[in-house]
Image 1 (cartoon, rainbow, N blue to C red):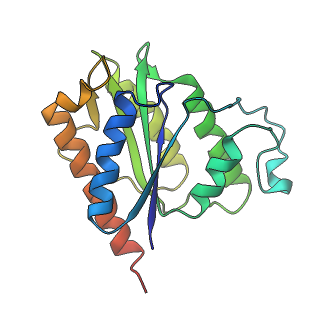
Image 2 (spheres, helix red, strand yellow):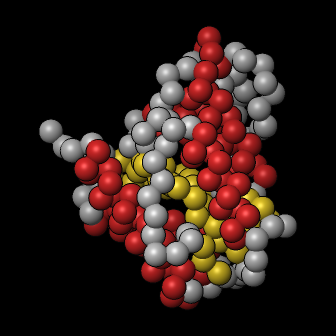
Length: 191
């Protein structure tokens, strides 16, 4: 069965970013595609040290939780990343994780190529589009497929649960999740 991995870049395990991704998960599963959310909350991550060892080891040499994400991602057909907005950009540790995933993919078997997905940005007031643009570079530079929606994949909210009250934002990310699931089913039909 096809699968989408969703990565929540929030340090809050049940915060707005996780809740928005959970809405995506429900839509994806309703379209017959398996989905799983991994939260970076409580995970140990580091930035890439540009050692190049991933080319020979087929994984990252750093001893933290990133290789677990890479292993799950290798077996998925889709990858959606959600980030809270921090000072007008995507959260720094999330970007470090994405850079390491991209580095391992590019140095090994290009496992990210043709995965379907895209970024979602969640924040109180502003910085959403710059956060999406920052995360989008990961998708485009790794030969991935990013379907659209009816607007940018953003949701507004500060306190946990407020993003779910953003009707247009939630409608947009649900449509995006539907497009991810439908495209995966077309590219990777079940045998």
